[in-house]
Image 1 (cartoon, rainbow, N blue to C red):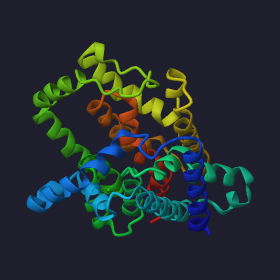
Image 2: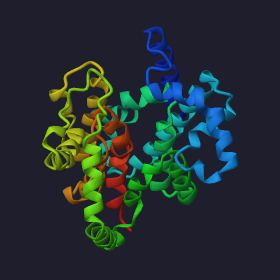
Image 3: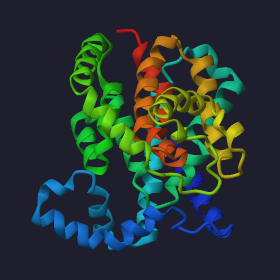
Image 4: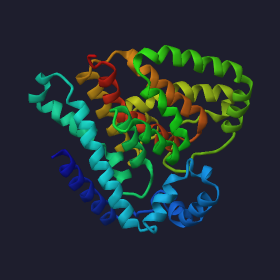
Length: 309
């Protein structure tokens, strides 16, 4: 039922966006995938290690760069992801099931406007979100992780979300040690990134703090996760393009606060991972694409962390 309804809704949104004049290549990456898929796929055949971070080019090539087929595939991935999300969200107290507000919030989470939009494109985000949900719900965990890394090497930053709670402290001790050992190189790399302009959209007015150098990187590390989780970035950059993103964040936060056994310590790992991406990019629209999978899975991440053993 959830799969069928989700598929119908996302297909209707696909038709609506095209009717409103939003083209399939609204995101420049879409043009790149279509134009470069064959060449990149051939390079991967010659040097298989290049498959890392380039897996989506193979999919586009297999579909012969057909925009309609690729979008249809993303719509199927969206619908299947919703089925998995809803299955995990059903672990909540049965008393909430008769509450109309509960269903309204769940629908808001499942039909996150930005995720709907991404599913109507040929971008790779929908597949990455699907794989992360699969990995978190223990379905084909290793294969899902492998596909994520093939699709986006930066997905390695998502992996702490999959670590069992009992191993979290060990993981962070090891991570902190690595950061201390390579701190000088990391600071140099951060300064180089901070000098790169990644604000590609005119409507992106969210402060990047680049003018403050290393302090600016620290501000992105702290501020950007907060405004992303809460949707407050809309107040800093009030534009119609950011409204769908904000609505999705608000629904996710309301569900997490009201319908999960939220302990704010459960937000520590998602917050840190989102903060790391704040060090790696300087444009908020780019940043949001990277952290969006974390926002999508946040409710079921909290549910899984607090599920009775």
